[in-house]
Length: 388
Image 1 (tube, helix red, strand yellow):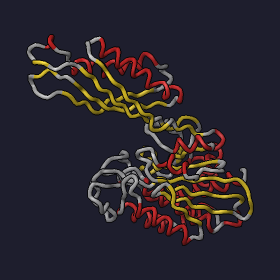
Image 2 (cartoon, rainbow, N blue to C red; image 1 turned 90 degrees about the vertical axis):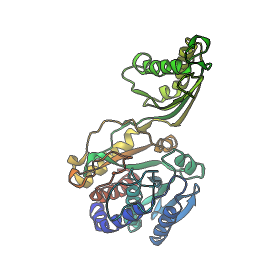
Image 3 (cartoon, rainbow, N blue to C red; image 1 turned 60 degrees about the horizontal axis):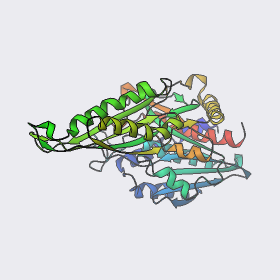
């Protein structure tokens, strides 16, 4: 049986798994039930299942003969969002929801495991199934790697369901695909006083406001316009009373970029701009910038293999060209250990309401995409191991 046909034959099971996980979402580092169910299903397929990275699962499928090792990855954690969809499989946990497609990722990778477990005689080498916790805070991939999930792996492949892409289309371009993710905190310290006599103090709100404005000059005047950079301040707190000069402002935000060198240099650049701007208002600035994930860069060779897998399954018309996105992905850590790529698999179907943005309370997926992801996982593994 061909891979596409095999994936379609298990569609009902894929939908059942996806809806089960959707109804029982678990937050980061709380994926206990999800991990238990994944391990249970893998063992039922005759696949070795190891519990690693606290709530993660590593499945191992060895083929008929030795060869290379390929890893396939799915993330499992949900988000602290209250679901607004009125569907039979609505989240049963108040304030917790799969609003990014991770429930579909788990179902698709289980489907690929099921398909491949019935093809052991056709597999040369080893397939590892990485069911990863804690992607939403970028801690899961490093934890999986620390416990050996990527040891000896020759290539790694992941899928992200994507609501900006039509169902049935797949994007797997080489090069930059998702941005680095940085967490930024800036504390601007002035000197409080009476609001009617600002000259006797140092207005932290005025200084902090100038810092926010000047941070935008980094992307527009200090970094090449061919090297996209985003610096966003999303939280800004300061002041105690309407007639009291503010003595301290704390702001938090995020940074995004695609150039690894730029990502590493942003801390020094932001610190210089924030400190010097604050100083011009007689204030002081303290900067904390933590790089959560590096940029995700798809390896050209792995992307080409994956593209070939898509064309083999669904024809050239299924391959989509999609612009890179500023969202972050801790899959980028895996690509530091082995060449890898992430494919975006479309779930957008306006008639089904599945074209809603990720992390939205009405996010849902077109379940017709589940066999597509399952087939792609399995086909890529076979193609890579066969050297095609």
